[in-house]
Structures are given as C-alpha cells and as structure tokens.
Image (cartoon, rainbow, N blue to C red; front, side, top):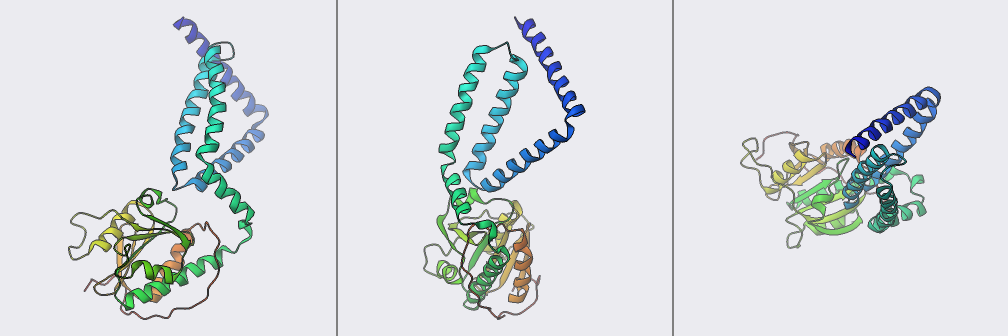
Length: 300
C-alpha cells in the first residue's frame, strides 16, 4: 500500500509538471494575468485586514487550505483517497460559511465604505486637516505643560496594543485630544493611537525602551515612544509634562526640542505613509508657532 501511494504521488507530480509546462508554453500571458489579479486581490484583502484579528485568522486558514489542497490533489490525485477528498470538499464549504461569520465586522465595514463612495474623497485635504488638528493640540498641551503621548499608525498595524486600551473611534480633533490628556482624566497617563484620521483608542500602554542606549533622564513617556517606535514604523509624538518640550520618535530615534514648525514638517512628511480609513469633516484653523529651540538638542 505505501509503495502504491508513492507511485501515485510520483505520477501526480509528473502530471502537475506537465500541466505547468503546457501552461508556460501555450498560455503564458493568461497565467501571468491570472496570477497578477490573484496577487492584487490578496494584497487588498491583507491591507484591509492589517492590524485586526481577521489578519491572523486569514493567515491560519490560508496555511490550512494550502496544505490540504496540495495533499489531496498531489498525493491523492483523481482516483485515490476518495473518502478524504469527499470530506475535504465538505470542509471547504464549512470554511466558506465560517469565514463569513468570523469576518462579519470587516465585511460590514467594507460595505459601509463602498456605500460612502470613499474612492472619490480627497485624501490630501483630510491628511492636511489631521496635521492641523494635531499641531493645534500639541501647541496647546506644550504651552500648558500637559504631558501627551500619541502614536500615528502607518504601514505596520498597532492592533495588538490597541486591544489593551480603551476604544474611542472618533475623528481627530484638538479638543478631544486636549480632553484626553488633561490632568485628572482617567486616560491622561497612557498613550493615544491614531489610524488615518480617526482616534482609535486611548489609555494604551506602549512598550518601554530599556538598555544603556536610552538616556537615564528620560521619563516614561519618552521611553514608551522609543520602545514602540523601535518595534513598528509608527510616528510617535511626545509632550513633556515637566518642560512642555515637544519630541518625535521614529524607528527607535528620539528627536527632541522641536518647534511647531519643525513638527509641521515632520508630520507633513510622515503622513504620506498613513492610510486614511474613515471620512471626516474639514476644519481649517492654523495654529501658530509658540515653542522655541531647535531639534535634536540635549534635554534640559
């Protein structure tokens, strides 16, 4: 029996290789087009699910389906392992039904986005609005020496740490940010996570940076900014509670003593890597610069 299965496996591999050669010789352009379409669809799905629980689920399901399909089609072929082939066909139907249930929140969100005609919205104006709202909040917090810690999600999702925080899901506004970080607020000691032009969560605990490379005088907010930026590509904004100093952490590097204009340049450049997910109204108010000193000075 094992020898029979081995012979069947070799025959099936030869048939698969023959089909591949036939495709490459006669239908190369069609195959390339099909693979390109499949790649685009998979990329869009993974990008849509990035940072959510659904991303981990779909990776696990994909591995199971790939292994199962290869095992049934190559090892079993058309005439062998009939019972397993029958059960696997039923399993595929069950998986299709289960995925609809598991991804129900994501599917609903996708349908809502399509209904809002998101593809025709002006992403540039929305990013500019987010920058102005952030600048207005940071300027106010810095002037009043109110500590703040804000992470702007970019390509790498922050879904893991967001789950431990308090869900907010609101438009980015300076009034809301100022309220969250104001002393006495239940959330003012932790961090806020932004995704696109939405405040996703507040009261989020960021991982602290450790080691001799971190200056001993840095407080917990600055250590948290360095720690998170070392693990992901997020842009982290920090306002010192003691001095009102504005700092930015990116890829494990902390730049301190920024002015509002310095921060404007950093945000304008950094927001180009941000994907906007939800529509929001445009509010135009230009905060003026209030803090002084140059970037990358040693802390006071």
